[in-house]
Length: 236
Ligand SMILES: NC(=O)c1ccc[n+]([C@@H]2O[C@H](COP(=O)([O-])OP(=O)(O)OC[C@H]3O[C@@H](n4cnc5c(N)ncnc54)[C@H](OP(=O)(O)O)[C@@H]3O)[C@@H](O)[C@H]2O)c1
Image (tube, rainbow, N blue to C red; front, side, top):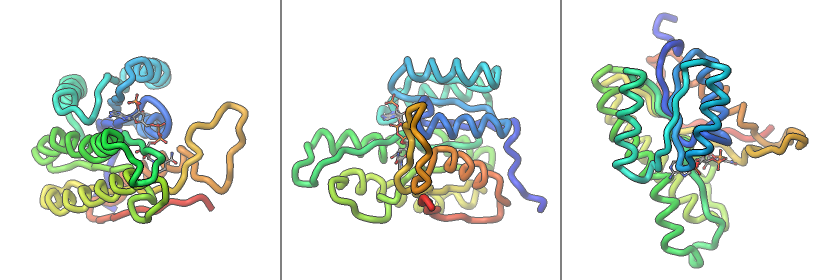
């Protein structure tokens, strides 16, 4: 294989990298030799995670407070990452959440909040990052969607709508950036046992954060001539 993508020394942005799945993916990318920039709305979480990971991977991780639904915050975050690391090769759109309500009982502001983060946030990040990737003729964008991007679940109407939209955005983007050698993937995991307490055992029926960390590194390491579309993941 001559066109395998080499991760060492490359730069990634992981949105929502301060905790949960985003933090684990960040750890895996750092282990693969990448430099990683993380963001989230809670400054304390970002600062704590950067400190923890910097102790393991000195000089390889930075972070800043940034609400992905706000275009000015996204623009200044991406500018800061470029100023610090120079290049930008990988974007992981991971920030996201849902609201557990029946569709007809969903408050309008809850609808807006979920759509603004899960869909508009990824769109705003792509708007900033894609032109840079086009210039470099390389790049990977991985959208963390969900099985809720492919199936309907009760009490998850706005979440399903947002994740279906995220997959649609990714598919359209893939067609637009393909001529520039940029890959767009959607990861569609089922329920993840994401926020385990220290004593909680691994539930073998559920996906673990680490499984997605492995999958992200796997996707990024595939031959560049391959187009890989939606990846479904379930506990086994
Ligand atoms: N857990 C599951 O079972 C599961 C299954 C399938 C897919 N997913 C998807 O996986 C992703 C990560 O989920 P998780 O389980 O790790 O959840 P989590 O622990 O709640 O993490 C979500 C992350 O997103 C950040 N975030 C939320 N809104 C944001 C905004 N507007 N701007 C910037 N950052 C924002 C949060 O930080 P702040 O709150 O500090 O902003 C946090 O770091 C989500 O997209 C989720 O939909 C999760």
